[in-house]
Image (tube, rainbow, N blue to C red; front, side, top):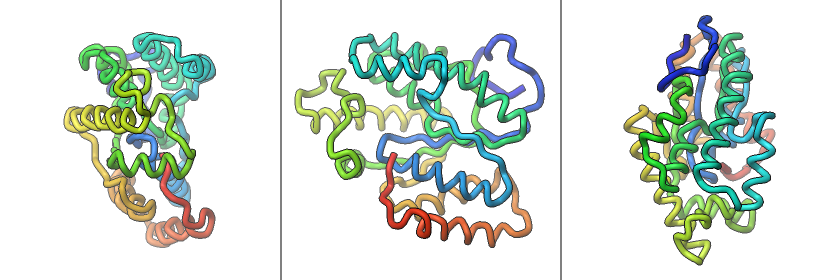
Length: 253
């Protein structure tokens, strides 16, 4: 049975989960999604099957969450509960079966983002901890730490504008979206700093180019698998992959 942060989901299998759960956390624009792709390639080159997961990907409520965000009508507590239902569905039907099969589950965000969002919107840390207490404890959580000004630059460069929710506009921090963005991202960053100490995050500087971030992430992931023959060749191939398949694409979250 995998260890959880609280009471596990009812009826959860007690079989041995041979796979590994690796979590990439960080704000939009911190480089999470780019790093998830690079890390997946690196692991698969080394012979490890990888299953991706993230937020709003369940068939149960994923679409409903997206619709609710478009309308900006639901209260913060209701949104937190919907996200918890989305995560529980993925945990039961995707994450745990993949771990049982021996796959590496690579999560592009996990419960920590959901907890941070809930807390900055008025929930207590204890309430958030209990809400997501059924979550299994990852083998490794890597937090890509990027400054708000870097996040702003990348968001404008990628989307041409700032997202309503990632700017915290629902919190009425400021009428100016740029100012609200900085205020909101700083609130989230403080909460991630607290969670990093509480839950044992391994922090990586996300202000740098993807290749440098990937190098440091690989160094943290490597000990989970040991070192096998041919690893050096696989690592060299994975380092060449971003330049041959993606060009000089900038980091994105």
